[in-house]
Each structure stands twice: as C-alpha cells, then as structure tokens.
Amino acid sequence: MAFDIKSVEYYYITVEDQVEEGFKLLSVFAGVGVNLLAFEAVPLGPTRTRFTLFPDDGSKMTDVAEKAGLALDSPHSALFVEGDDESGALAGICEKLSQDGINVYASNGIAGIKGR
Image 1 (cartoon, helix red, strand yellow):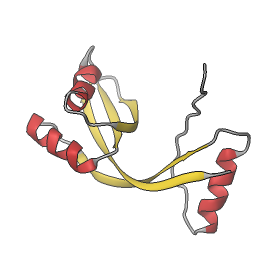
Image 2 (tube, rainbow, N blue to C red):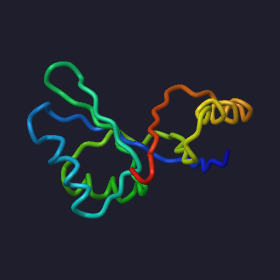
Image 3 (cartoon, rainbow, N blue to C red):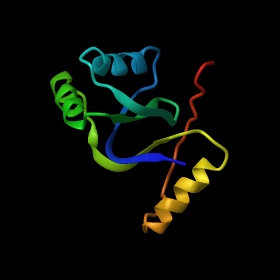
Image 4 (tube, rainbow, N blue to C red):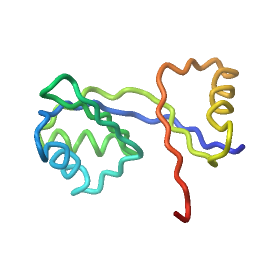
C-alpha cells in the first residue's frame, strides 16, 4: 500500500443556514481559483452551518477571505492522505501514524472509484 501523506492547513467558517449561503461561500473561493482538497459542512444548531475548508494553498485562501470580508477561524493543522482504495487501507494508515507517534484525534475519509 503506497500512500502520500502531507501536512495541510484547514479553516473553519460559519454561515447562516439559509438557501444559497453555502453556494455563495464556496463561489467566493472558486471564482478566484482556490482549489479545495476537501471540505465538510455540518449544522450548528437550527440556524448556522460550519464549513471546514482544506485548501491546497492556505495563504491564497486567507487573502481571498480577507478581501471578501469573510472571517476564517485561524489555520489548524491536519494530515492529508492519498492512496489506493483497498480493503484495510484505513487500518494501514492508522497503524503507520501510530508507529510514528501520531494520535488520530479525528478523521474523515472518502473513496473515489475510477471509471464509474
């Protein structure tokens, strides 16, 4: 199993939970070429949504956010792992990280299926 593991930054931003707010937020970054490696959106109560954004260029994202008047929660550190999808892949990643003394505090994953 070959994996590419790199350190990345991620940012939180909270928006009102209204139709089009997520679209508006993501469009600000997409419109100037900020590439997201990953994102997550979760509700914070009945009226707000928190986005977690993992850009491939954190400084570009913060510059764009500042110009747009968006309040990003300061950068946080994470590991971004890419590799082949196979049975036991996640267990292998966690084993490698634990052997290196890294505690997995939280994790998200997705498998992409090529050709479908």
